[in-house]
Image (cartoon, rainbow, N blue to C red; front, top):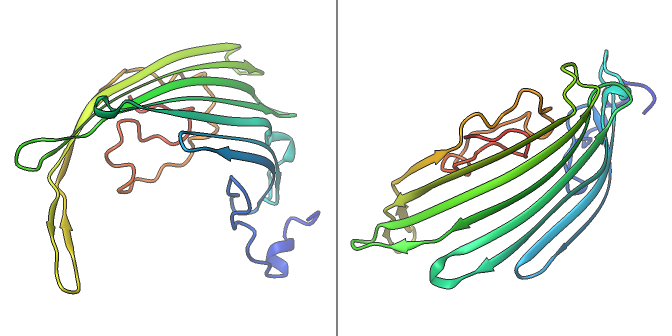
Length: 218
């Protein structure tokens, strides 16, 4: 892959197919070494990542080496009192040119479900997270950033179900009311894992719909 146009010249496809925990981007080569483990009520993964570019005008020196990227989560089931998820994450990114960032995060997420009279599904939730960043080579000269962010709210839905001989029909009107902290996105925090956002049915009713950790939707 020393030639930037190698995959195009020889019409080699499949360069962006997933081959591990993380997916690559067009004309970026992703190397990843990872481990993954899970049980009935916990999950964790850890990965070492390096990148190479095949894009004109791009430099490998500006791409990060991630050593490591880690995430872990533990679930606590309290029955009628809901489910609590406690998580931790860390990311260490080094570059030859550009900003180096070291992030550590801890968070908790609680939710439960209640069926109200008439079949209305009531789902209150609360979540909070603390992030700490240590930064090098920033243009502003800031070396440390810490923040706390939280959201609270509820979802209401009314599932309407009609079984049929060959087709079952499910219509579920849904609404959400949420309140979150403002000003959570410090301009000194480098945006590494939240560059892309896709609005679809999986993120529409999320209080914090931002992907990754660097951006928080308050």
